[in-house]
Image (tube, rainbow over all chains, first blue to last red; front, side):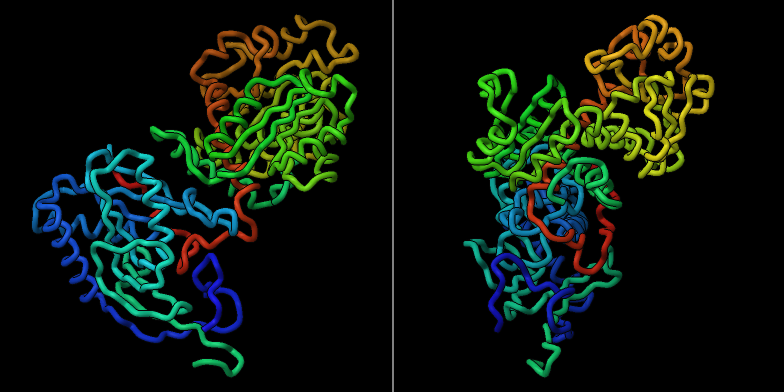
Length: 203
Length: 320
């Protein structure tokens, strides 16, 4: 395994080698079931959905949050507020690389005393979640902050864990987990890609 | 981009990127806590060798909202009085360990000169008659927020173009955004060869009815060393924008401070067509964008997302 750079996941667009699909671990149906189960777990754990606010982290977390809200309204009948959060200005790697904002932050009303469930597609180093927690508390003091992700791929660099996980997926550090969501990518699914060396290296 | 000395430093995509960042920072400034930790640990010094209210306050507010530390240097109360040269002053400031200097100076070219001396990023906050790039950026931002696209918008810049760094930066920035720019004023106050910046020239207000936007410039009495107009009164009679000359469908801009009764009549300054207050508001977010662009990270722009360049969730804001 190559030494991981200090600040970033492997970049598929640069460096030697090319990306190969290793496995497609979720199809559309699996993904839908995972979202439904997480939605149930959120409601169960919080004894209802009344104080819950779903906050999606750009880019795909925003879609995850919307889908969880749609699921909750379908079985619980509660319209859970959904927000979107851009954590760019809170990242700890701003000084190391170029970080551009990904979308407009919009939190629904006041997060004070609510249960904020941060939603994202992949939990990896935990640094995005760290930035998100800092960002959320700037908007008010939630009663609790929880974390829902479609995939936990390990390799945490901070003491952070998810409260709701679609799938635990053991990966190598230099693999790439790609969550596809119809709203953005045109289809639903989760894939693991690996980086193959161009010159007769690992396959 | 290391320095912002003139509009040219921004390149073709630079203006768009600054405007995009400014949109993000506009949302930040509307929060209860209008502050993000993006530039924590960076130090920004403002060195103003010339009077300023809005530019300096707006830069300092911008830096503070990005969590940068700010230091202020004003010519009046510094060792300049004891005869310290510009070079020595700048080296002294640099020795404090700083990341950016915001410079205003009465002589053109001072920011460029300083940029050659030290490692910090230099932001030109107005140098002589030369350029005032952040003013041009906030003008473009203000107008784009009001009108949407700027392609084909006709802008008349009226007044003392000769002494105006705002005009020199503004012409270039508006032209880059696809605007049709005309400068207008008495021949003595229109610099020769200004067309080369990409604008038309008119010596009278006759054709101003075609303008979508009138951008009035301040009569810069403090820079006038000769007699350029017979009297302010005669200037006002021929070039002042008043309620009669400003048509109801036209927008009015002015970089401030306004000389009421000279370049603008009082009634148009206070009219709803005037964007003058919005220009000041835009100043903070645009300067946040410039500081962020210069001081945060380096290298080429990160892809918006791994699979798609443009993020589809970006353009459709959610219901609040």
